[in-house]
Length: 391
Ligand code: FAS
Ligand code: PHB
Image 1 (cartoon, rainbow, N blue to C red):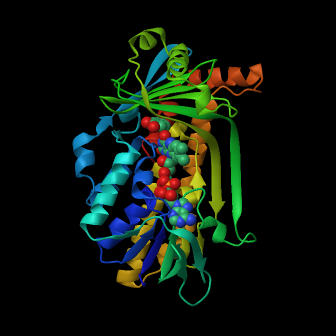
Image 2 (cartoon, helix red, strand yellow):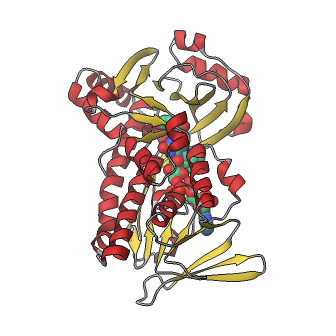
Image 3 (spheres, rainbow, N blue to C red):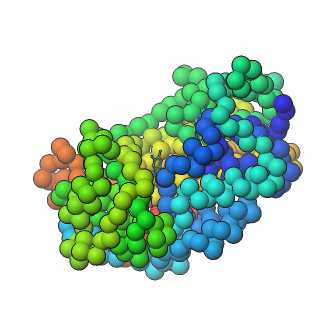
């Protein structure tokens, strides 16, 4: 097979780029390790920046999002039971965020690829990237049952997530990795219940962090911080709901509608960045290059800016014979990635209980929160990061 851009990974990053390039007449093939059902079974991000929503519309995939999403102008922070609201729209100069699940937007992207005859190959095995740095064009192989298939292309996009093959295809002597692992994880539950609050509640509590989020007015998403040693089996639905209530303001806990979990999982928290995001004709995008703790809702949104930069760089290459965007991609993407890393680390440090932290550190958290709500400038900084820094 031959294509212009071979994309490894059929998650939101890979699908979004494939769809955007297709609309501009640039041919792609997407290789996905899992089945479509498996990919669509993942419950992940819930909050989108306006920039992400604009990309969905530009990819002609925004219709269902615009009809089903919620636009949020703020969220609450609960500090040991005391609620304070962060007015995102006021402190960001008019911006807001879109609440629409990653599962749904991935479904929308898959359906658009199908509608336009996009080539997405599922259940691929043993993907290998060849001649990435050579002056000759790269090529990709994968196993399809007993056969080895080959795809010749101009460029390879590594959109295959943290555990993918692309980042590992960059030589050790070239790749630099930066990582911070947090001493806790998030236990997440999805339930067909009415959300306890119209806006998200980020809760700091001596027992640990909690988050009240939603997917719609009949589908709620909740998280509690748990030790890394915990497993999903340690947490019955009843135990989860009781612990969540302990970490919320009393009136919120009293109003909480509980119900059976339809999804329950534990995600470890890490901050991770791989540099460079380009090596020869390989470009990394999304979780393949960077991971953030989900506290700042930056994960999926950082993938969006990578895709935006790559999309415009590929247009300039194929339509204007201008490779400036490709040559500057890694530096430009990393500049925004690191700002999302900083914000995600800050929100995580502010709101979580660190098992080995000194009393002094806890007083600093108290002070950080007190300062935040005493200063419009501090709230402005939080708001502009949360709604998304410019692409
Ligand atoms: P993805 O990991 O989504 O997609 C990569 C795709 O590549 C996968 O489908 C995988 O099957 C495929 N793949 C892997 N190896 C391959 C190979 N060798 N060959 C072919 N295909 C291969 N972000 C938030 O903003 N808020 C959240 O609450 C949040 N929660 C999260 C919870 C979990 C458990 C995880 C893992 C992430 C979470 N994230 C969250 C971040 C998440 O939303 C990512 O940012 C988003 O999935 C990034 O999308 P992709 O870059 O497409 O990577
Ligand atoms: C979610 O709804 O899954 C969600 C929302 C905001 C976050 C993290 C997760 O910061």
